[in-house]
Image (cartoon, rainbow, N blue to C red; front, side):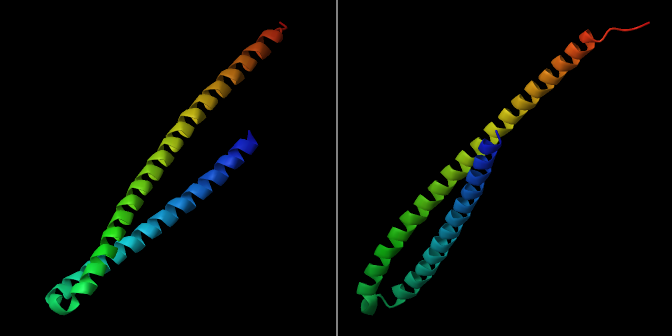
Length: 119
């Protein structure tokens, strides 16, 4: 039981770290996309001289937008899965607590039956 709890805690810590890393990666990509979009807007004013540069940047921007979309989907999936695990753990905990109360109640009732009143 304690081993499972320790494993769960370790997995939980690892999941939190992974989610944090995904968020950081998403933010870096989002910042990069914003930066690239600003660069693109500046380059449009100089399009005749910078046509080749703009084509390369458009390709990079599209790749990063796809990566950003993928990262957001992965993060949403991971957070959704994590929330399901938390919900399941809550249900399991409630079930275990209920079983524990029933067991204690049964032990109390058995103890009372074994004691004879002297009077």
